[in-house]
Image (cartoon, rainbow, N blue to C red):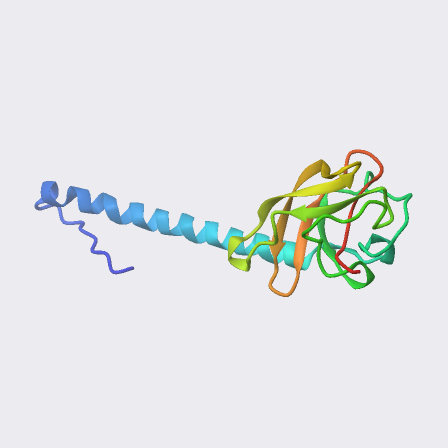
Length: 165
């Protein structure tokens, strides 16, 4: 089984004692490693398959206007689509865009598929600073699109933006 030799003979027990312990250890280790790999694949599948969609025009970086915020956004995985754009912008968005006073953009770039879910900073542009406020999120590259684990911004006037101009 698995190319390992098992020794159960009572003769010469001392010289083969270590070998009888190694095989069960390797089996247990292999099972744990396989379970860990399955869990990682399952998490990736779930995040890339079950997400909320942010697709309104007033969430795009080209939309000029204020009055909305993400204070009531529930912690979950989100995907930008449609009139909001395909992903979060990766550079500072001008104030009063995305339907809010302080628009949010992704600082640190989008990950490769092989990187899995990575921690990134979202900056919110306000006053004279492109990163006056910030929060940590997770981002995953699902191949054809990105998903973001977003949460409430904590207070109003902050909102996550999509990249559509």
